[in-house]
Image 1 (cartoon, helix red, strand yellow):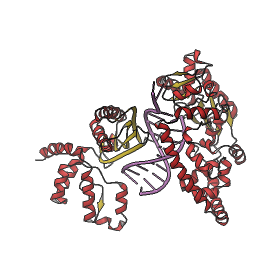
Image 2: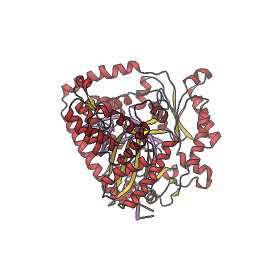
Image 3: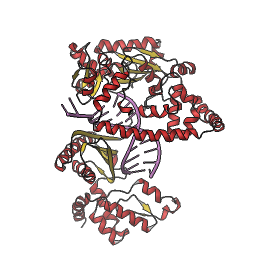
Image 4: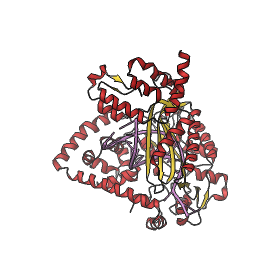
Length: 530
DNA sequence: GCGGATCAC
DNA sequence: TATGGTGATCCGC
């Protein structure tokens, strides 16, 4: 059966659910739907992946296993252990069923009855009463109603949740001047606080949780460990309204982690869990026992991530407020293939995004369109421009161009993502510039390029070739000193004239939309120069 | 850089 | 009747 359709018991409060029964009801409700068929397609792909991995595991001889174990112990584990830091005290706080608890607070009649926040399409949180029936977050409301016909579904009020979230974070500064906080969870480094106050950890955690309760009426759970990974896993162990402290030494950490399911590791979801179980790796201890198999079968990044997690090795800090990498907006709607309807949706999504972008004073290099078809299959299509995108019209026309290329299909979701973000103040110095400036630069190149290409520059704006294509042609670095630059995008370089021409044509072919703007810009720019 | 996938909340 | 939205990362190409 497809992994995504089976009842998933890994959340707090779901232990006592009759799994067989819940799975039966979920399956019965989903059977035959497009969603279900898509889950089955995904399952098939996953099964192929699993088969490959299992076959690969079969090629590992006992001798090789021994050799790998030695290598892993010496070259990975030993240096990690040497670097590891037991000195910090990290607290992870997690509000219990946050949205649902806030609703109970504001509407006490919802207490003690099964209730969830969301809609008949999708739930974001369920209270513990509802969880007894197998109702959980990320479950469609209409399925939840089959599991629990008495379920009350209330619509979310994000504004209210933010308000309370802010209230909570203001209580935390006392313990850590720089807490890392999301809507319903927080990481605190209380090392300094403990030192200054001369209090026991347990005392402090209790104090924090009481403080939150006294100020908001909401309960939370807490985990304490010497890094964020251990603290987070610990929180989960005593939910709701509980706390777990893991002592900062190797033995306590191993004792704590060993018997837990790999699924407790944040970053291991249902797919990775299934992949690992096909290698007989179910508990966190198994990761260490079968480390040679993992090394042999998994990608290096994944291997290191899993083994470090199993050893309880992770950063002490969540890297502080690193600037965002991208921003996106997406909408789901009644499936349609009508260009007029899609155009109108594209406009409203673009508008939202343009306004988000403006609010943070950012510009973007890459635009990605995401489409989900009525059969739930998804695609993304992206372009990277060599000038910066920031205006509504640019977002709309670029995404529309990408969308129309995919037609005709019936679509149920349209998303637009902007990435490669540059703040407007930085954009002056980063070598990228807005469309008008870009055209101006292109025109300045006149003396250096052939007439043919110059005409093209006059006519077109551009979209760069792919990084992949660049790498393909950049193998001989020593030739770089005598390269010519692509007159269209100003980024691609090559000393091979044929390649350069091919690339330039590629650039030109992909920029139709900007032609008009480029020509307008040309007129504006040329006049003052005379 | 692009596209598909996975994951968390 | 009906299965979300946002942000991030990894892998193969």
